[in-house]
Length: 315
Image (cartoon, rainbow, N blue to C red):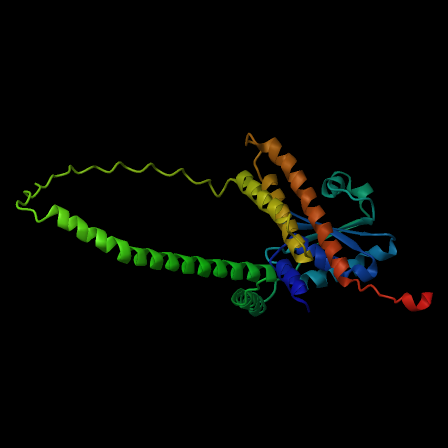
């Protein structure tokens, strides 16, 4: 299994909704079922879509989804509500649509409870995860550009030190040649001094009382969900400029999803409540867009285009 697949499974086991969707879509691709998910109120709301009713057979699909999720064992996720319907166009607010009119929007819906993994299995999974992270941390990877920049830095540092040493040697040689003779001539014209000047009386300097340093600004409360969501969104926006792999886009999708959940948790008594609701929808839209980018990079990685030599055919 590749490092990227291991990274996706690790994120899914840690409870990343975007990674869980990625794993489910890969496992259910052979049956033509596509999934979406949102974690709300302690329940993972899962939407399964397919082109025909046969692909959405309730007993078969529910059991298969249960097996996949119990194999992942996502942290802090035990209740899963499985919804199904015939595939439709992309809808960003699908959870609100099915909650408003479940009879016309869904074919069926069933809530399941995942089996909790035993203590030893969870301990072994956490130990393997921490060991893999420490191993990757001990083996840093340097790109050719980074190595080239480091070589240029050390080359410039060595050249600057050599030039400084050369200037010091030239200055010392000039001082030995001209400075000593000028000092001797000055002593001959001045002569020895007959009276020594009285020692200067020490002047006591008053102690200056140090002014108290201004108190630092109080940090932002960790409980302010609005501020935390804005910071997450800014980090995700900056990271999206350099994302070039499926794993990086999955991580961005998880950040946007977490920012959306934080915005959605702002209480209605907060004066920023309406702004938080609008941003929750926008961040959810960015999370699904990042998930689409992850699928795109995943598809490009799995494709192996065949190359044909047409030069011989044209002769």
